[in-house]
Image 1 (cartoon, chains in turn purple, red):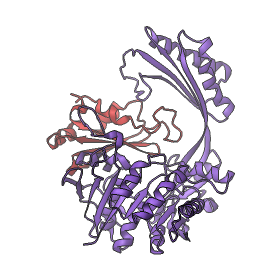
Image 2 (tube, helix red, strand yellow):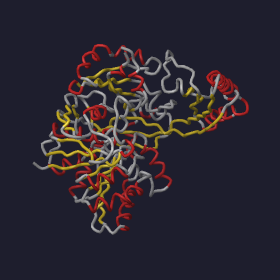
Image 3 (spheres, helix red, strand yellow):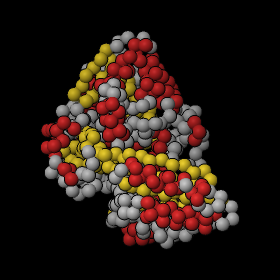
Image 4 (spheres, helix red, strand yellow):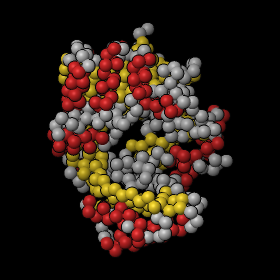
Length: 447
Length: 99
């Protein structure tokens, strides 16, 4: 039975490079996919593209491709990635430039577009936004991006046209891993069970090292060997959808049913209905069997017909958040930190009464990530004060970090290590749109 | 006993919704987890953090529960004022639960 091997080159936009090079070199791969897009990455990329039409793709594209393109060409591994972000065409042109420099003559580099639906977003003015439960037209800030989560279609077309490298904007995370299966095995678009299995592969691989023991280690309970040189995962899948997950021998980390279990539950809601553009996958009966060191056989995923809609992420200018931090240590530090919070609270009421939409007053080391009012904490040997506030203008948001910093000379004794920042917040709203409004397109460049 | 003794966990985020898994190390503990770690108990444990409802799903073959917690991320990953905008630390907080 025909099999292919697919590696995971990145689990997020800023992920490490060497593990992916190790996979290309030693993983006996056919494909490597780099998943590099978080929810609002495109909204930020869109602003970069507006400032410069040759930008808006992942900031590490050049860094990665300088190494990955020549190595992948040498080892006959095809690359698929959503590093195109808000500008897949410019990313593809940049890759062509890099490939030329390395003399990779004949390499075919494709971009998949069509996810950007900003030009037609007005059609959906009355559509309810998931996050706010209000019509899209009622979003408080200017819309800066609107991108549909495409499925495998465009990537498969690119592969059919001989692409060695496929660069996309917004696609579903599993799609960049499943497209090779559809292309290589000739799976049909309504082979729901096979697509369910392919989606499971994508879901296990999409976060890179999270399935090989990264984000897993717990000394004494879940010890992981060699986390500092963690290997990234790869899957070998057969045309009937049976597969195992493993990593390159000698790399750090581990692949076990437990590492797989944490990853399969990651970012899913109802395991029987995992919605993607290509299939509604069912992970409820998934099973893991250890079949050798760092090798887990995965079975039990199925699928149901896909829905008639695409999810679309809309980036909009939301607000400004200012935050500042300062530390207190030694005897009495908790009381001094609490006094610091009271001072900042009083100051902000004095200088900008009613100007903040929301505030958060944290004692880092005590109650900053768990702010359950009943949570019991002890006095630590040091504590870090943090105040964050949301406002509609930068000038108002700036007052928060400024008041925290001013504790240096105006606050409790021993304040140290103050930092301050103010960020413009581009938020994401989600809606469902009709499939008919989305038209994936492919362009192939030959080096 | 804390859940930490017998189970492990990871948090995921989508917008303002957090999902926290709870996976038994030993399959024989799974029935007890199902019985003791109810949605009501989880909602109470996350008081002040989770503003919406808590829904529980099961993945029986891998001895995992998946808690989906609505309105749990301070308005959502992109606009939360929390240090932990993704709520990634919520898994460890679930494991702090006494049963």
